[in-house]
Amino acid sequence: MKTINRLSLFIIMLGIILNISAQNYYASNHRGIENKTDIITVKTANEDDARNKTYVWEFDSSVPSTFDNNTIQKAEDHEFGSKVACLKVLMEEYYVTQEEVVPGDPMRRTIIKKPNIYNVTRKIEKHLKKEVKKGNIALEKATNDFTHILEVSLTIVNEVDTEAFEGALDQNKKNIEDQISIFNQVKINNIY
Image 1 (cartoon, rainbow, N blue to C red):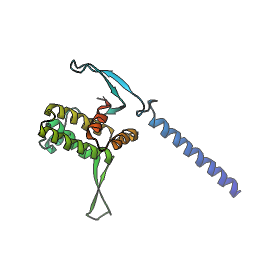
Image 2: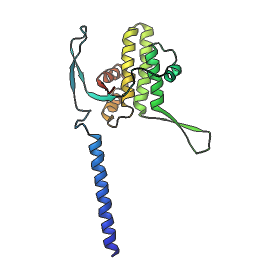
Image 3: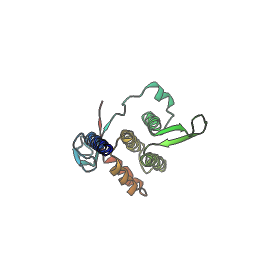
Image 4: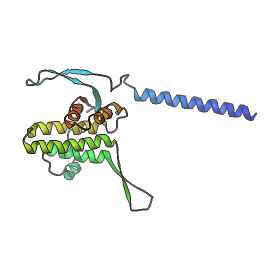
């Protein structure tokens, strides 16, 4: 009798696990596409840049286009403007969390979500600031590039399937210009 009960319990548990696995698979692939292999070609509307632009990754964005007073007050002056400053505040809020090591102990541990993307974004910011200071890149172009990079970083912080994107960044970790071009291969669909 014990063997039959154990066997039926095992079969029930196996069925539950398979059901959960199927639901997770369906939920993670709800659009029926894989972001890492889709290539989207879009004709740019800008007259100066009439060539086709190819996107390798596509993500849905919930980054706000306007910022609340709390975010604006936290934002410090930035070389690339107030929008970049507000996006940096959001990046710190989304990526960096503090938690207690032991409950009741005042020591805190810093946890960074997706540290590869976070660190690359900070490295690109330093690089663009240096290039603007040297005069190798116009301030407006650096501002546009870094704004897009921050928007991409904020968009993918909660995405599940970013391994291909993070892998591409990791493969080009010695060349910042290649990392910037990887960020430019991301299409952001604003959900607002």
